[in-house]
Image (tube, rainbow, N blue to C red; front, side, top):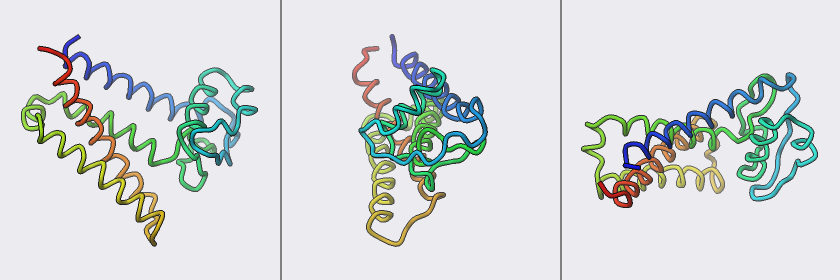
Length: 170
């Protein structure tokens, strides 16, 4: 597999994941998935996921493990909170956007080697700085979480692409 195909596989995977995460609240009764606060790295609500259809169970089990799922920091669709918080959804959306942007040859020609690595790290550091300010200071903005999350996702896509260009010959 060449770099172009690997990038397109990732682009498609992130698109499918984004659509799934946004669609799952709509295949469940209005407002049935709410107050799902938990601890990242733990399964806090297995009793709920095990009683749902496989798509809902997969999406929300992923969120249960990967995210804190705080209701006040989640997007609400169909009266239910999404499986992951707004920042995490924005990170995935940013990764999709980053790989979509990298489909442009002009962007790829400018974002090669160290330039891509530096840009990727800067975008991720911006999100990390916002997270630190949010936890230790007066900054707490849903819009800022989404914007910096998307920036981090784009940065991650740049870093992954830089890795792919070095790891895959040709």
